[in-house]
Image (cartoon, rainbow over the protein chains, first blue to last red):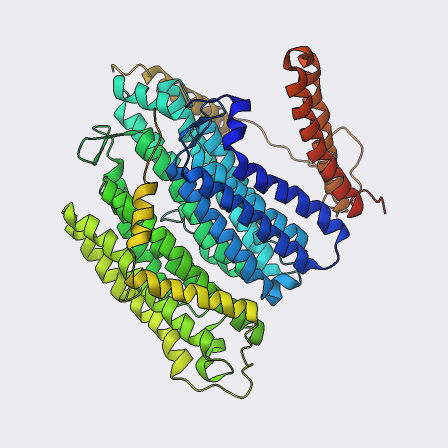
Amino acid sequence: MDLDNLASLEYFYPEIILAGAILLVIVLDLVIKNKRVIGALSILGCLASLGATLQLYSGPSGFLFHRMMVLDHFSLFFKIVALAATILVLWMSFSSREVASLHQGEYATILLSSALGMFFMASATNLLMAYLSLEMVSITSYILTGFLPRNRRSSEAALKYLIYGGVASGAMIYGMSWIFGMTGSLDYSQIHAALFQGQPNQLALFIAFVLILAGFGYKIVFVPFHMWSPDVYQGAPTPFTAFLSVASNAAGVAILLRFFFPGVSQLGPDGSWRFLSGVEWPQFLLIVSMVTMTLGNLSALGQQNLKRMLAYSGIAHAGYILMGLVVLNTEGLQAMLFYIVVYLIMNLGAFLVVVLVANATGKEEIDGYRGLAWRGSAVPAIAMAIFLFSLTGLPPLAGFVGKFFLFAAVIKQQFYLLALVAVANSVISLYYYARVVKVMFLDFPEASDGRVELNPGAATLLGLLSVMTLVFGIYWGPLVAFTSQSLQFFTK
Amino acid sequence: MSDPFFPVLVLFAFAAVVVLALLFIAQTVGPKRMTAVKADPFESGNPPQGDARIRFPVHFYLVAMLFLIFDLEVVFLYPWAVSFRRLGVFGLVEMGIFLLIVVIGFIYAWKKGALDLD
């Protein structure tokens, strides 16, 4: 299918529903005083869009809008991930005292716009579209990072994020201009044809790829484009930090995979991908992956602020996710997709507990977690232990299965060094995750520590996320089937 | 050198050399007789009054931004008007949707008091 503008609209209704929801929220925010209604309405909009996306999943694939975008299982998978993250984060925002002090109509609107940008990121098949969608997500992220009024840290984080983002996207669009110069096209399939038929200058192509990786890498947060993340994660409103850590990362992976796999590699008959000879970007990513996970984990060791610690752990997890890219086969990519879903669940759960503790004590530092299990409800502490052990990758939790698939893919292709580094990193990460668990269960609370209250909404979400973490650790079959089905790129 | 882009590299090198050479010559050879008048921001203009770094009301930026958005909206109307006949009903509906979105933005800005000038 290769549809023009009008015919494309028929397959575009998840986006249309989401855009409609955004407009509706803007208008209703002006007339409705009860801001809970606005949040509920945003969730409803997302759910409607999710329903439409799932409906398209069983439909045909094809190019939309004169090959600007593509509709295939891969893009729909990341749309589902973005919507799931948005819904869960909006739900989480209900119980956040921090968010309650903000302009909630604008908060919901910008969050939904960010999700819409991620939709475009997942389906862009044109460098121009890729750039624009990335900017859409970036700009909404800058705004929400600096959304806490009269908060110095939040404003500083937003400014840092803006400057880093500006540099990264500048580098990226410069790289894209090189690609355009070498192939004469912005369209992925034409770039693919030009690169594989012609004789592109290998060095120039490699430089262009590295420049483009700068833009994608700053979304996925891998080294050396990670510097913004700890400050931004710490300064942003906590539910939005959670959103940034999972959805923004996933969308970055989507745009990266779409460009580097159907875009500039070729699928061999045995399910392995072949890249242009002489342009060693997988080798480059191998090193990046190792450095990213090591640096992330080592920096996380000394952190006292939970949000900052989770930021560094997010860098480490970006390194783990990249492992699946290095092996250049379907198995690795599938492991990446699986890990993204698992990471979404466990990381959102961990941030939810951070929100609950911040509500009770106003603290994000680790001493706010002193004896958390013995202060009021024990559920948040138990759930946090589940999420943290899952992030470490201990069985029988979902994080273990995710890591198992990644490691298996890497070992099968005989990247022993990478596997070894990753295992060593998992061991290092156990220290800082387990430290939080120790503080929560083995330390005694002091009289000044606030009691953690659990409202029904937060309790339901916490229960849902921890049950999912447990279930996917034992019964992962359906999720594997879903990810392997989603690994289908439409290229013709 | 067989690379077709080699002349471009030469051009870059040449540009860098020329700029650096000119700066260097001006720095070393040129005479420097600094006076108070010469150090003024505008040597032959009015004497400067006060500091250039004054605080703008942030409202200024808001109005400027709103102006840009609604100005661009009108700019979009021109190409549509030119090809109105060819686009037909489809173009009309599309423009209607576009205008609706912009008008919602306008109502929002109005209601939130972004247009109040005080």
